Length: 458
Image (cartoon, rainbow, N blue to C red; front, top):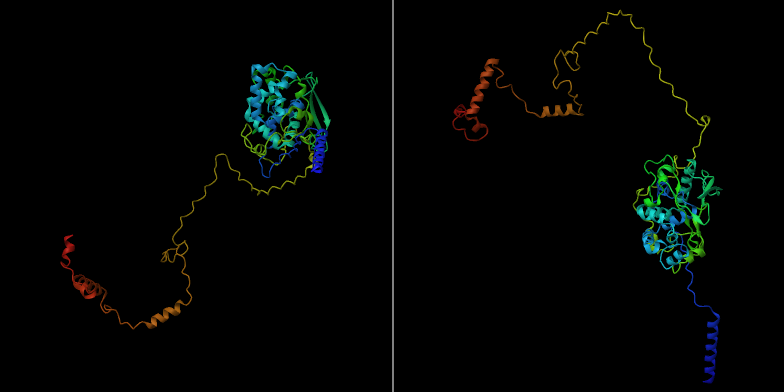
């Protein structure tokens, strides 16, 4: 018994030692879910539709642009954030106080990071149909969305609307090998002052010049009128008041133009995303902070300003920002022209005096019966000239001859010996006899009463 107590005491001491050495229990870090893979045959927006959707935000600074694209995949949270910001109790918050007030809210880090920019929240909240289509496009076509942004930036730069200013720096970076050859340089937009961000205001119908897609004009998703500078609707790019960055909500994401996705700082993202799903990959995925059913819902395209997705074969020839390529005429192999058929040479025209006129042609004689085929001596044969010729029947003469041999011999006709007038009288008398009483004799029926008197009464 004492030996058993010693063993149990030893196990108890060992357990206490282990509990002292080991740190408190920490829940395991959830594995990063794989990115949403677009199923085969899923609907996707065309190049024209993507350019129209991205036109209102393509000229935003890179980091702000990534926050807008990620937040657009949470449209309901955007609405909640816009209402929260409009509350007088929160409208004056800024800096660390704003970050602390947002910490307990169950919003995605991208939505929280837009709260310091009421102009951007107003733009997303005031154009919800556009916001939903923008979020769907970014969640399912990240690479194509990033390519669309670069096309639009090149177009605005070619129009002289996108250039460095006291508010922002526009610079070019060599493109990676994976980027298409049509875009050899990547356009980067950054704040001129790292501590202040200026949100540009512009009219997409003006800043990009002539729009090449009449069926899909650029979406005019403007924020509330109080946030837009009046000159932006007439001239092009304009800037309002700058927004001081909130250190806890800024600088944790940036676009990866070579891969066509968004890089995130995992530590910063997890700090903002407190009490929610933790990220373990530095590439943003549309499945973050979503259940499997919510992630699948992103694959159903919503209605919006560009209509239903219309997938095309690729970049159209007149794409926005695509440089025109000149082809020399010598490089084109054109087939030789086909010779025209020879025209008949006209003979010499008669020398007519001014008052004379050429003699009229005599009228053609009308067709006579004798000139028509099928007539004999001016008479139409039985059946007319349109009657088809009888087809010969094989064996017909032999069958007719056999039937003639089987018939009994017949005597001369009954009235063959009378002259023509006598035969006519005999025929009439025979007909009268048949009318008066011949019916009972030939047909076996009773004689008709009244004779011919009944017909006279009529």
